[in-house]
Structure formats: structure tokens, C-alpha cells
Image 1 (cartoon, rainbow, N blue to C red):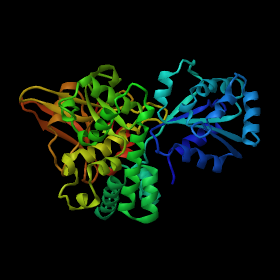
Image 2: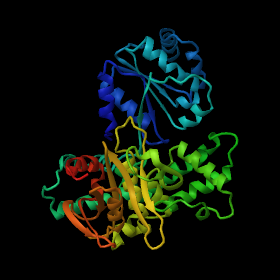
Image 3: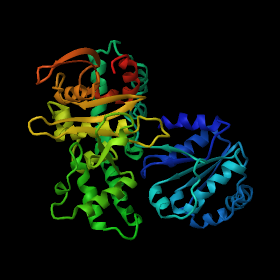
Image 4: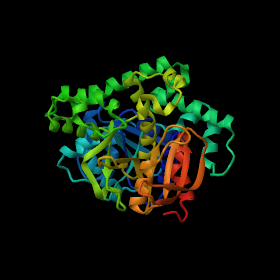
Length: 459
């Protein structure tokens, strides 16, 4: 299965100023597979250490001299290490946080050696360690589930993925081709982007087998709860984990999880799930400028689950639910499509940037408004709505654009793509002139590129 991150690794390999690379992401999003596949294709050999399976290997990193460490590794693994040709892969590094601190010495003293580390629950290990962090001596890559376009390529529809990568607004997109994309989109909603689930679907074409894999992944996450620390309430964590998929798409309220639980306990559980990257907070931003994170309200946020396929499995949704729905965006009150768009926008930034997404709302009696997602392209704010039908109302988007003095918006729906210069009549009698880019849901992976091309002088 081809991942876009593979191209990033190739660029990193050939960069003479490269630093040790740390892959960050939830369990089972494919970090280890990505590194092994890359090494097999682009390196002379791979020396892999897994600190969960080989905990005593951490002793090999007991000093600050990489040449000595390499000599010990060669003896330990009975394998030659050749700087410039060997890839040293330190997997599950969260199990040996002292090794993480050693990465700076490879950068400073042995820069010719290619070093990649990967870890799940890395934030927990780093939060509890007292070792000096290699600030400025390493670089990060953030990895999420497989995207819709990676799913297309994995399921023998690479031509469809390639077409999306070069599509320009205004090009003809025949209805028959659009239907092909929507069919694959429905499949992706159910299968999701977890590599093992996708591989099961590729191998068997069975949604039942795929569901079994996804259930196993969900169980694995819950088995990991014991690794989150010694002061956690496992029962509360389990409760929140099971309820989050049902909360996607709406403002998070603790009473919808357990009205009898104390908010601080639920908040603590959510914080842990966010650290483990199985949940993401979409924080409210007042959106008066860039960066959006400068004006967030910590008390107001929506939740995203790690993966839409896992969400569907957790909620008991099947392909039949999407095939029989008159409007796919209304399944589970639209939460499934919001999850799909949200998880793709989270990882649509540069791979070295922390995944981040915001929303905006105004809570006033008889004049409330909410924009589903906000993201930025350079200095431009892009308010984004996920709407049902081909002509869904955009009242909240209009309110936001007027209030923030902007004139460009993005809408996702099930229709063909379009770019319109439009005018909207507001409730106070004013008019709003703005440009609306409307994209089919399956084009979310190209949203940044197409927005950049479409904004022009709109903002």
C-alpha cells in the first residue's frame, strides 16, 4: 500500500542537513510498516530495534557517543551499520525515553547515519521523563490513517486517485465518474483508513472480515489504557472512549457522556485520549486573525475520533446504511461525513506540523450560528461547511463572512465541484458578495490546493 509519507521519507533521506526523524501517531496507523517498506526500497539495509519487544536494548544507549552505541548495536543485532547506507530504526521508543534523549548526539556527532524513531503514546513517556529533550536536533512527522486517495490506490483504483491529484476547477467531471468516486467514498466510510482494515478488505472483499479487524483494533486501544499512567480511572476512560464516536459532529457536553460524573474526571479522560491520538479536540476559535490557535476557548470544543471506519464500527453502521440513505450526509445526523472531512483536514497540513483544526460558533438567542471547520492557507482563513444536498443553506457561513469581513468560503457536499461568485441576502437587509468553492466530499484531499487556486483576491 502506497503512503504519501513515503515521498517525504525519500526527500529526508537525500537531504544533507537531515536530522533524526521521529514518526508520531496513534497505534496501528502504519508507522512501522512505512519505515520498513521505505528501507527495503531505498536503503542498503535496516537495523531495527523494538524497545517493547527488546527492553534490554535500551542499555546499549548508555552514553553520549554514537560511535560506541553503533558498535554495541552491531554486536547486539549481529549486523553491520554503514553510515549513509544503513537505516537505524528505533521502534516503540516511548518504552525507552532515555534513548529519545540520545537522538541529539546522532545529529551532532554522526549525521551521516540515517536514524528514524517511532512511538505510540510518546506524549505520555515524554511527559513523565526528566531527560533533556533534543530540541532543535530532531524533526517530527505526524501520521494519521490512510487517506481516501491512498485507499483508492490500495484498492486498485490508482487512476482515480491520480485524476484527483491534478484536477482543476472548471474541468469537466462526468456524472458517471462522479458516481465511481461516490461509490468508493461509501466504501471508505465503512472500511476506514486503518491499514490493517484496508488490507483485510483488499484481500477478502469482505466487510464482515474488515469489521472483525476494526473491532480488534478498538480492543487493542482499550488494552493500552493501563499504559496511560498509574493515576487513571480505567472505568471512566473506557466509558469516554466508547461514547466519543457518538459525540462527533456536535459541541462536546460532558452530560451526554455521563450526567452523574464529575466534569474534571471526564475532562482528564479526554485529555489522555487526545495524548494517545485516538481522539482530537476541534477547539472553538474567535477567528479574528491568524493563527487560529491564539484565540481558542478551551471550554468549547468538538471531538473527532481517530478514524471514520472505527467510528462506524463503534456505532454499528454498515455499508447498507449508506447505500439505502436518501442523503448520505444525514446518516447519524451527518456526524460520519463530518468525521471524514475532519480527519482529512487534520492531516492536510505539512507532515511536520502538529495536526490542528478549529470551528466557530456564535451562541445568541434567535441568531445562533456555527461554521463546521476553520483552517488557514497562509494568511487566509477558510471557513468550511459540510452540507447535505446540492443547494443546502449556508446561513452560518454568511454570518461568519460578514462578521469577519471575509469573502471566501468552502463547502463540501455530494454534488459536482463548482466555483461561484455569489451574493447572499442577510437578515438585516444587507447583502454579502462572496466566492464559494463547492467540492464533493471525496475531494477533501485536494481542498488546500484548490482553495489556494480559487481564493485569488477574494479575502
